Amino acid sequence: MILLPCPHCGKRNSNEFSYLGESAPRPTETGDAKLWRAYLYTKENPAGWTRETWLHSGGCGKAFLAERHSVTNEVRATWLPGRKEPDTTTEAGS
Amino acid sequence: MPTSTRKGPASVPDPIATAMLARSPVRQSKPLRQEAGWEVSSADTGAALELADLTPITKVLVRASSSAVGSSFSDFGRARRDEAGHLVVGARPDEWIVFGKAGSAAATISQIEERLAGAEGLVTLVDVTHRDVVFLLSGTDARGVLEKICAIDLSDRTSPDGTAFRSRVAGVSCLVVREDRDGRPAYLIDADRSYGQYLFDVLVDAGAEFSVEVAGYTEVF
Image (cartoon, rainbow over all chains, first blue to last red; front, side):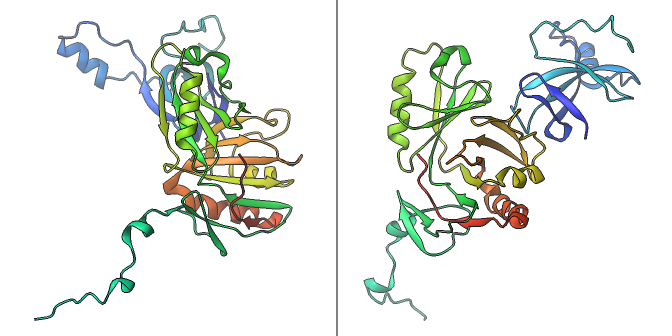
């Protein structure tokens, strides 16, 4: 069982969550098609730390952001959208 | 040419009278009776571990920001009774479900409206009585049954009396509320109506090793 820490509910079984994909800043220049194409379709998919959006669909129903290692499945931080993201740059494994 | 002939009023059941009786999606065991416009079972077991279908109870959904309702409602993840006997459950960070006596939706809504009259921002109240099923699993072994089909730690330390959480029970997204009865653990399980019969069957199956018995409708509010 892989546990994912929801900021509202605490650690829960990963089958309660829906993966919403890599998280990237939304383009501010609304008219630029290139930026929007990159935002919508281009994913980095790294073998390492990645920033993702998850939805706790089987629980509180809220979306949150997570930093997950795509190889080890370790999750080092989760936080709510719009909140200050935790500083994880000094931790080992980055 | 074949024609249909009405054979008199006695052969045609009154469509209004039959349609007005609400039914749970779960098959009810006999004997049957009516409770606040619902067809319910009045089976009595007296068993140590019971599963009862409490779908007729009133359920009112409240959506608001937690700052708007303030301390008049229970916190997220907690359930408590209010002065009127309703069970107020913090189901989501911005959502509550108020359980009440069967057939009391209008009265419950007006009581909540009164209590939240001074709340700032938008507050949404919806009667979801017919949207959800509610089961009551009560008895000393209730925790053992639920642990088989739900991945939450149900120990007294992490899930004491008055705990509420949303999680998957047998794969179905449910709201589970622990409200002990007569000193024995009891769990209210609220799920979408369309999953009712499946979830009920799974609970009966999981409880078989603990000799669970299906009880009739009991008034808990």
